[in-house]
Length: 68
Image (cartoon, rainbow, N blue to C red; front, side, top):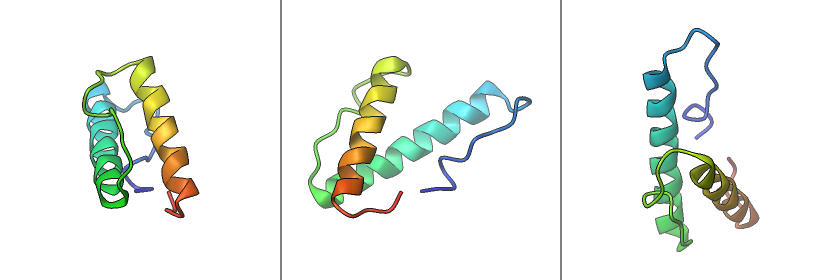
């Protein structure tokens, strides 16, 4: 998961950044399914609400012992 969360430098294209976030969200969704954690990552578009949901999901998965 760490690799999917990698931050890109200032010259990275928007498409590359969006693709990396989408891949990371897909991994989070798989982890949620495996650990029976509800999420709304697939229902939210790009933006603040999705960022907040991503943070909430990460914290929940960490609390269940998943190393992110």
